[in-house]
Amino acid sequence: MPQKKQYRYSTGETIEADAEDLKRLLRENQEYLDNYLDLYGSLEDDEYVARGNGFCDRKFSDDFIEGQIAKYRARIAELEAWLAE
Image 1: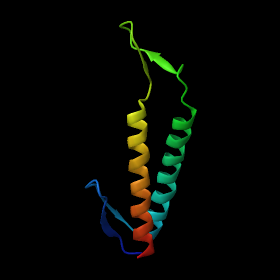
Image 2 (image 1 turned 90 degrees about the horizontal axis):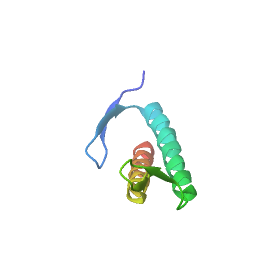
Image 3 (image 1 turned 45 degrees about the horizontal axis):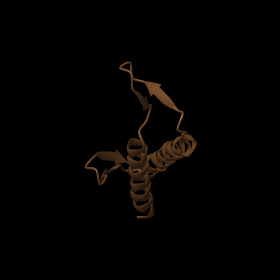
Image 4 (image 1 turned 120 degrees about the vertical axis):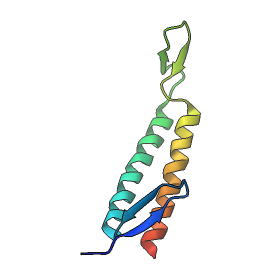
């Protein structure tokens, strides 16, 4: 059985994984990134959600989505570097 090693993301989160775990995490993070990129690209000005106080807000702010995209890009880069070791 492959030996698991501890890894630390730049965010401080630690994981214990072997090469197969890292490959699985890479695939999952790529799917998350793809989903956020699709969502970001499909947002229209009329995609708002009522807040109940007379104002409307988008369900997801641009800042939130951009933050998620940056997070998953960083994770993917870290996972790829760990797999290259």
